[in-house]
Each structure stands twice: as structure tokens, then as C-alpha cells.
Length: 116
Length: 108
Image 1 (tube, each protein chain N blue to C red):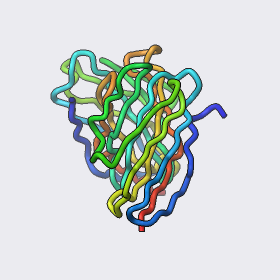
Image 2: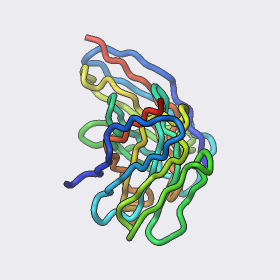
Image 3: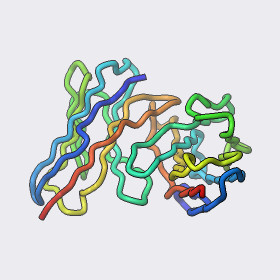
Image 4: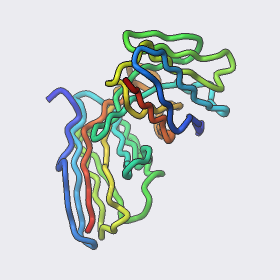
């Protein structure tokens, strides 16, 4: 497809289990972002990838969170030993900063995570 | 990082012009100002971006004063479908931080 694709759209898991969330950015976009949005709240920055540079992990809330981006394209956000406070919508966005200083962020529909 | 401050919520009526102001006192020289719109259960959607003065597109205008410490998103003649959360975003490069957003409610 032409847009940012995220999977799964919904994930229900038990406390203590690991989860993987996937993001397929727009083809050719060099920048990829992960955000977290709790119910009724704003977007919380998690991590940023740009080309082959080292990712900016400054927003990851704990060492249970990690992300990788393979081949400069698909990204996976992994949450280990999930806790109830991890319940949120995880949003992925991609952009092409080469078109401007920031470029327009294109967001996926998000992955809704519920930890029981 | 430039922190942004916006009103938490605003109410308007159909057909009115809505102006939402965002404060960003410590904006950096290279920072652009971008506004996004978010409907429930959807990811944010780009509305408009600017650096200084005025930018206009088919859906909105963005006014930025000379000191760039604030910006105003102007939505002409809003409709019920403009009910959403509007985010002001300041920055460039890596960490793009969203503020809390302004929840706009358009009433008939």
C-alpha cells in the first residue's frame, strides 16, 4: 500500500508476556518514528531512526522497550515483560526529511495494546 | 527542545473561523512549526507547516510573528467534521515532540 502500515491493529496480552509491534513505512522514507499514546493523552516520543545513523532512543521509557529497523525499512518495537501501564496505542510515522527540514510525518493507524 | 503550550480545549460553531494559538518561547533558529489533526482511533494527519510570516493551503492558514515565539492555526468556516485534536509541533531532525494538543469541538 501507499501508506504506513502497522500490525497488529489490536493486541491483547497478559502481564509479563513479550509483544512485538511491526511498522512498514512508506517506501523511500528514510526517517521512522515510534510514539505512544495513552487514552485521552498526547503523543509520547519513543524512538527515531534516520537512514543508517544510530537511532535516537531517548524516549524509550525503560529497558523493557527496544526497537530495530532492518534494512532501513521495516521496524519492530518490542516490549518485554509487559506491564499494565504499557497499555496504549503505539503509533509509527515515517517521513522523508530530504524534502525539507522536517518533512511531513505520515502516521499509521496504530497498534492498540492492552495488557491484562 | 522547544516546548509547546496550547489551550486544552476550544468550542466553536459551524461556519465560524477558529484560531488556535501555540506558544513556543524557546524555538530554535532551524525549527519549523507544524500542525497536525487527529481524529479518534486514527493517527495524526499533517495540516500545515511554516517557518515565518504566513502560510496558506487549501485547508488552513498559519500565522507566525517575527519573533516566532508563537504561531496561530486558522481554520476558516469550520464544520462538524473539523472536531478533532490539533497538535502544534516544533522542531526538526530527530526528536519531534508533540504537546498535549487542543481538543476542538464544533457544534451545530
